[in-house]
Amino acid sequence: MDAVLWLAIGIVVLVVLVGIYLYNRFVTLRTRAENGWSQIDVQLRRRYDLIPNLVETVKGYAAHERELFQNVTEARARAAGASAPDDRARAENGLTAGLRQLMAVVEAYPDLKADRHFLELQEELAGTEGKIAYARQFYNDTVAKLNTAIETFPGNFIARWFSFTQKEFFDIEDHIRAPIEVDITRDA
Image (cartoon, rainbow, N blue to C red):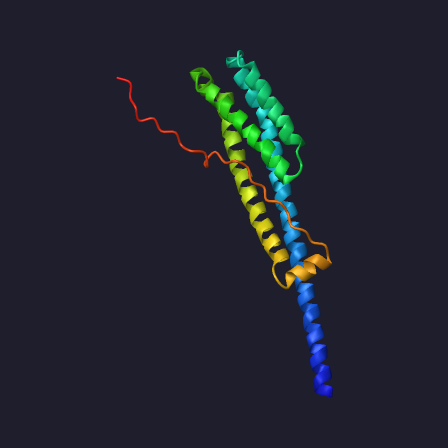
């Protein structure tokens, strides 16, 4: 009888310890995901702060591109106002498209491409884009771990019991994913 009692106590203690471990793992992953999201937010806000300076610099050279400047400004406002990862990703895609158009306009103005202020802004924006990509990677990796832990056994019981929910991935269109256009024709 004593052996059965000790075995039952051992099993209960083991189940409680596994439950505590899983709960703490969920809390850790949720906290890392929230930290990752805040890092994305920091870098996106930095990007939003750079865009007006970039637009103003280009405006000085290409004043007739008023509609483009308006579109970029509106896209920036939409992106800054979005909060959920899915909404934010859609808004960021629109903003990225506007920035691509803005950079295409820059190509037509050699003096602008050589402007020190513009070059510094462009370099800062490129650095910020790299930081956004890193923060997005960290966040999505953490969300993948959290979502997997929530869905797998025996964690799914603990997750349901303590109301841990899955998080959305943050996936914005990457210029690297866009098809590369190659023109091999040459004008004679």
